[in-house]
Image (cartoon, rainbow, N blue to C red; front, top):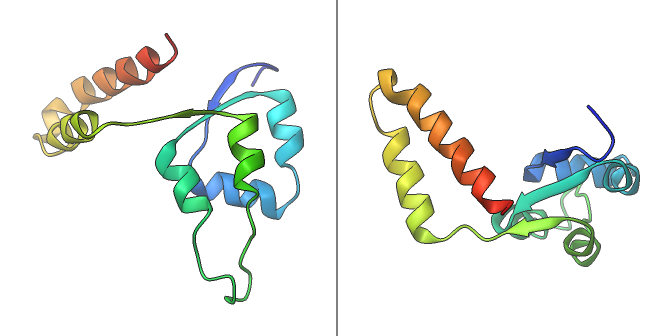
Length: 104
């Protein structure tokens, strides 16, 4: 990985980065992007649960690009994932194009 490279993170990686206190190092090294649902998920959970990790969602939102995914995009991806295995490669390419379009 190269400094400044765009890295897409999911909720699990975000929580783990806060748990291990390496969040600041990650966002200072890479251009981090995620989706709104990941921010939402990172802010939830039972704080009384042993091992619960507090995620500073304000800091998260200020330090990364957060993409909104509308219902049309979700439906399109869900439909493509329901297609036969032979069309998975085409779906991956199309999903890659969708992600690339977020950067524009």
